[in-house]
Amino acid sequence: MGKRFDSGARTGVVIVGAGPAGLVLGNLLLDRGIDCVILERRGREAVEGRARAGFLAAHSVRVLAQHGLDAGLLARGRTHRTCLFRSEQGEFTLDYGELGRGEVHTVYPQQELVRDLLAEYLRRGGEIRFGAEVEEISEGRVRTRDGSEVTGRYVAGCDGHRGVARATLAAQGTGTARWDHGVSWLAVLAEAPPSLAAVGYALHAHGFAGHMARTATVTRYYLQCPRGTDPADWSEDRIWTELATRLRTAEFGPLKDGPVLEKTVVDLRSDVLDSPGAGRLWLAGDAAGLISPSAAKGANLAVLQAERLARALVPALTRDDESDLARYAADCLPRVWRAHEFSHWMSGLLHGPTTEDAEARYGRALQYARLDSLRTSRTHQDFFAENYTGI
Image (cartoon, rainbow, N blue to C red):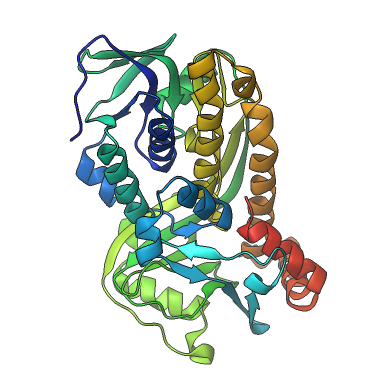
């Protein structure tokens, strides 16, 4: 459980949220001798068991390795360098590891990364309180619903886009740029081996379908669905039938199916705060900006921002030098927006109109023109590879 703090305790940094951003930040601060405490509203089992993303960019792997946080990743992660596209025009595979900057992904389920980061944080002597639902953040003081308080020189909000940290900044006047992609996915986690050797993206008149390996026995699938879809309306038979249709198994071979472990609906929306912090409150991860999952950038942005925030907080706490903290937004936001631009481009590639009117036919033709350019143009392929793996 970690050490519990007394009401009114003080520390260097109060970190709100024990996701990838909060745990990377906590480990990096401890590594530099900075006291911190993590407050997490969920229990430990829920934190360690939540299945989310699984693709780590080369930059994220480097950050984890540089700070001794990559033992599990090295032991169980798998290098991934190809992605596959299917459509009515056929199938083609891109070896993006040979394109762009020659970088690859490491496939490592986020829940395993979180378990690693949490174990290392506790091993380094970090304090954490589970079941601590934050109710208010004010001038470095964090109050939880049970009446406990802890005060830090700084507060790091890593509690997601619906968390108190973001709401606090918004109440102080920080603006938000946002976009609704108008697309929803049925996200399916299946106890089934991967059916493809690569990440699979399928374009179909019924909507997009995606195949993403997680482990040797678990695969993540996505099915584009109407906004407002109830996951309960999708039986296992319906899921596998629709996946077979959109992934064109009659042409390319059957899927390896299995029990559905989880099914949820994800609405693809994106937003970015005008500034990820001010004064004594600074944000990282989804709290600072929500990105659609269409290009697997969320966890990687969380690692990037946590590393940059730690780098800025250390001199602020050890030398009263806030110059790096003042540059945190300028340092992160250009890379955040570049990730959003590619995610937005990827969403346009994958999601075409599903109706049959003239405008829909025009939209689908543009979609397939983009795909054909990606198939045939080395310049386009290099652009794709650099942005697909970059952060």
